[in-house]
Image (cartoon, rainbow, N blue to C red; front, side):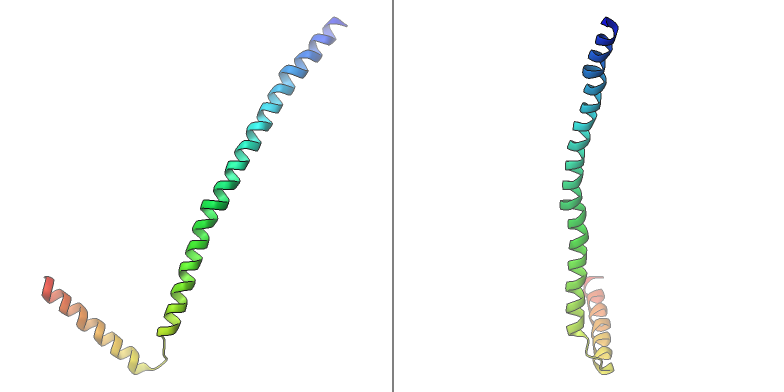
Length: 89
């Protein structure tokens, strides 16, 4: 009986203690992992989606479907680039 009591004590304190220590560390790490995923990873994904949605809404307001407007904007852009180049270079 003495040997079985020693093995039971070793099982209770040694094996079960190690298993519980691993369990506690796993639960703690999963909490921080979940927090990081929710706040940072999902935040970056949602930020990029919101920025693209905002840009799409802005671009939708600019689009008219009239070719003359697009030609004017293209000409104005080229003129602006040439002016900037001549002033600074």
